[in-house]
Length: 497
Image (cartoon, rainbow, N blue to C red; front, side, top):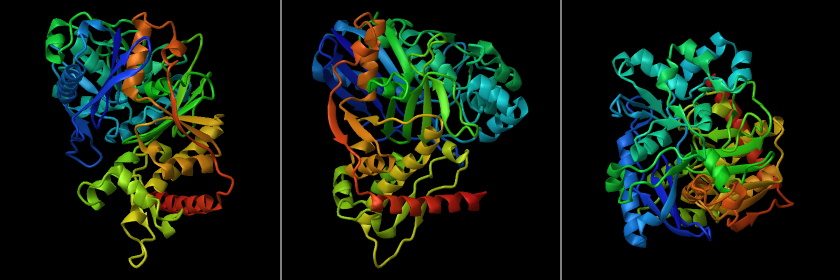
């Protein structure tokens, strides 16, 4: 018996096959091998074609089946994790009407800020726990205002994971967790966010039917089976945004438990059991995968857009052809803490929520031509992203999160000793590296709705720790480097204002 999980990212599509009884990962595949293209026709725009995601899902699945030679009829459930906050618009024939406006697109910032003011900040926070900000509802309002001919054809809008589920099953459905990440959910009233929808002039009929996070939301169609190489009838029994899913994958379900990831963007995601919000909406609460109105579980999400994308930029622009991230890390390890004064601020990938939706751009500071070499940039790049995590985490602490352990996956920036040790030292917190990925977590989670596992704890029983970073006693050099970096950031943001 097997379970299949997809992770629909903006960089690539990953698929995992898990043997259900042992929880062992049989195979992981990724498509494409290089990063997916992000379309940026204007400054601060970011779009992708949903059809490209689907084509990669099909190709990755076929490759996985070919390499493993397993009988697809033995797959009992499919789970989907996906990049959050994206907007997919389809017509009555389920045809995509325009490229998806994805998570790092900043075009709707002013629309959300205006709604925050006009509806009332206190009212928005009490009902949505967030400003409408740059989230999916505001992106849809942008389409309504700027592309009326497209808006008039919309039958349903979806998140990226809802779109992939629709391609697999033919059903247009979503979840409460998904609705909350788009600011379509009213936590106070426990229903669709009619206050915001009415303010934007958006009909509730554009939203898909609601299904449970771990419920059977439809079965694989014959057409989808032909395109993926699977067999018809496999149920889709789980879907969640990538950050709630990452937390689930790491076994983070309960209050004061915290997960983190350092992919294209960087995220810290902590669980609380009562509505909490940041007055400046720098931290964003969403319904966690196990949230119910009777037993609230909210994920406080700290997002840093300019994270792994900055380190990848350094690799693409500065490293010699063929240089790996591992080799970059080895070079960075030859440089002392603080990178001999070279400091990089990584905020160059759209509006940053922890900076109140300011978009200051990235910055390289204190470069000295006679002192700094290639390896300095690599260390300063890792330190700059780590410092961004530490800066944002102070806001989470103000909201009551004070964990002793942060759980992370083994497939991103946290594989770097420099990155992980910097965060562990400055937060005085253990970092536990768990041997799992988002696609593996989605596969295991599908086993709950498929009846393979009784609950979340059983589904994640077989997680293994791969590494651990403990805070060191002597951290003066780290603190001095961070304080210098923080001064640069404050100066940058103040100047932009």
